[in-house]
Amino acid sequence: MLSEFDLIRRYFTGRQRARATLGIGDDCALLTPAPGRQLAISTDMLVEDRHFFAGEDPRRLGHKSLAVNLSDLAAMGATPRAFTLALALPHADAAWLEAFAAGLFALADAHDCELIGGDTTKGPLTICISVFGELAPGTALRRAAAEVGDDIYISGTLGDARLALAGYRGELALSPADLADAAARMHLPTPRVALGQALAGLAHAALDISDGLVGDLGHILQASQVGATLDVDALPAGPVLARQPQALRRQFTAAGGDDYELCFTAAPAARAAIAAAAASSATPVTRVGRIEAAPGLRWTDASGAALALELAGFDHFR
Ligand code: ADP
Ligand code: MG
Image (cartoon, rainbow, N blue to C red; front, side, top):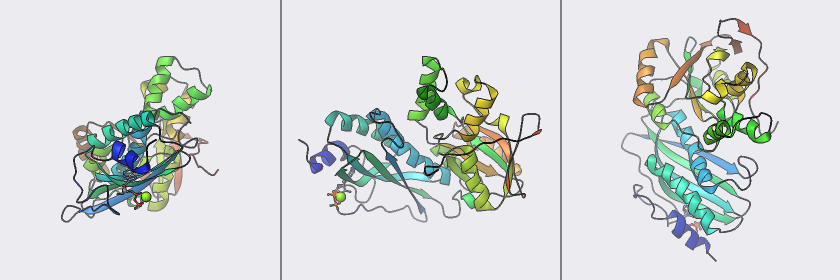
């Protein structure tokens, strides 16, 4: 039987190049930001049966637990540095831990992000990660920074995770290949870290879309005290969702959830610079609407005609 300390040593210690001033093993880790840089800090928790199904593949879970946190750093324009991992496990299962750590460290290493500490306890499966990133003071992409006249952009595609959920629930008949395509986006989201860094100091407001575009863009509108008009048919959909009926495509792209794409605003004068940021980070971005002075969110279709859409984001307590 693995002790708590064996478990930490075996699966979480010494697997990466040390970069922090002091990593795992003492009462605290020590992290020294580069001179003149600011720390960006975020925490996200994943709870079994709430954020993922019981029996979820541990390798994918290791990836996703860190991915949702890196996505928050990306949305702020920060460069990942380090993270901590608090883990509640029902039991110490060696095969599960090995696979979880493999998924976790593959993504961590891809972003040069070092595990510097954490906590381990017995309990219902819960994964809580805090990430630490760096950015130049004054360049953070704040939710309150949208300006009237800004363009609104989305990275990548929206609605794939919601499409996979519909497939799993049997709300929709998807071919095995189509379900696998959508499910990959649900289980292995891509945090848009390189794009976020390229947008720091260039874009105005940004956030990552975790609870559906409608709800999350609402946070920008509220914080910035502005409104917006979006072209629902401009919302980028992946190939499988693009083949679905229009009403479903609109619903899932606008209010799907679990997308982990960036929504950001920028001045129309910055269009060429935004295109260059998208190209340099190899991340597609799509312009989908405009920030306006009148509060609230309005919709048009592809022809520009006003559209009344009843869409709502996801709320854990509703
Ligand atoms: P404490 O008694 O201060 O809570 P612990 O005994 O829980 O410390 O942890 C010992 C060391 O191992 C600490 O440096 C802690 O950050 C690290 N640690 C514990 N659990 C994990 C984990 N799941 N991943 C990485 N580091 C961990
Ligand atoms: Mg502890």
